[in-house]
Image (cartoon, rainbow, N blue to C red; front, top):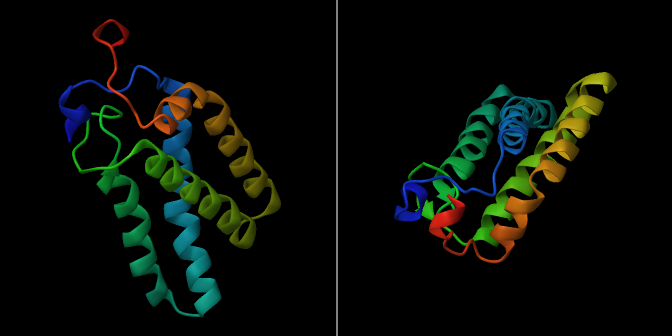
Length: 135
């Protein structure tokens, strides 16, 4: 549901957290399918892996977290989705990219986690409704 019916993104998010989450998603979308193709020996593996990695964060959202529509899911599940994408991004980057690029992915991942602490605490509490004064 769009902003959990509130029409506002979470006030617990910030520009750095949002940008690093997006970068992690991009890396997962590129390196994940690439690694799947390397592991299976066929580029046909790219299609289902890419569809799954793109659909997962686009479909399942915590109420009040973003201005997007999708299936409303509890905050802890949204955290699990983001951690899964982070793991895919890091593991895949180490599998298919040069060391310097994989290290960069780890740095972006750490920045994502550190900058998103307030949002993750809020999501872990089940993403309760945000008081009007905090929006």
